[in-house]
Image 1: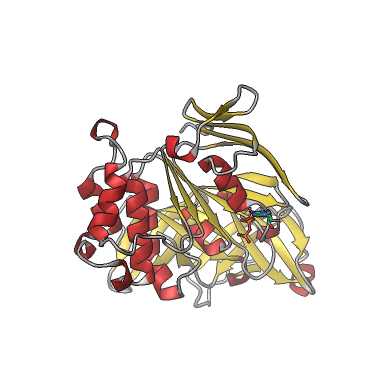
Image 2: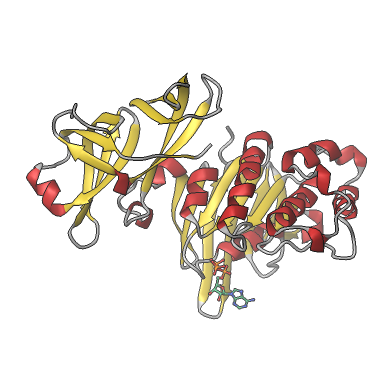
Length: 360
Ligand SMILES: Nc1ncnc2c1ncn2[C@@H]1O[C@H](COP(=O)(O)OP(=O)(O)OP(=O)(O)O)[C@@H](O)[C@H]1O
């Protein structure tokens, strides 16, 4: 994979805020921009989109320079082949879904189209909505139509600014599988702004952490989620993502057995085919540690690991990063348990996993 297909180098100052970033982003898959409110996520997207003419720096996609302040190059937004979807889908209320999509489709001359009409409808599952009016759509359907309209222009870059933030949990759950399909099937970079770590874990292969306008970390999501020097790897929401492969379905017990680089993991029955990848999130609070492998236990998943690093994690707790082969896991345990097990880096332990969340 070309990991520096999208160059985003930007410096922009407004009042007390300065955005100062220099990133070489991958050419496909979802890269999440994550950080506290006001850290500059939307501003970074706006620079990519050509909506911040005051920004100094360089934006270059697959060798095509969209902006370079040293050379005096600045393509305005309509000359950048990109799709931009906001939190609140802004459809044309006076046009039905079909006409909204046609508007996007016709913006790109036929010879330059990479995205077919049928494929766009199919990817977002909206064929049955074509005759509806925007006010007749649910929040989740509106967002799917908005994403389809952005895709219909055959963009070379897709920018999604908190596309799920205005939706309730059931609507989010409805739209997430479509976003996963985009990630799997589109050969273009998707830059995804979010506040929700569960969306990052589920969708983003790569992650950029922003804080006060600066990049504090950038890399593969699975790696950053378990780095104790970063805030993501702390607190009740911390967890690791395991890249597994389906080995076997046990229909009788309604379980699916998977393999990952470091062991086996049994999860609730999935419909993923044998040999297919399955990403699984294991929350640190759902992992306990023992020195001997327990046998009289209801816990299905017990994984042999080594303690890699440890750090205090709030009052009375310790976060332990474990290595199982090449895979990192985390356990959030009490400081008392850590002392009584005499945990230290290099020590062999067994991770008992109480529950997992299958991501795809
Ligand atoms: N039009 C504007 N004029 C002046 N300052 C602005 C403007 N838009 C944003 N800002 C400021 O720029 C900084 C970065 O804002 P930005 O919207 O990029 O942050 P964010 O990380 O996307 O935040 P959020 O998660 O709350 O959407 C903030 O301090 C914000 O107040």
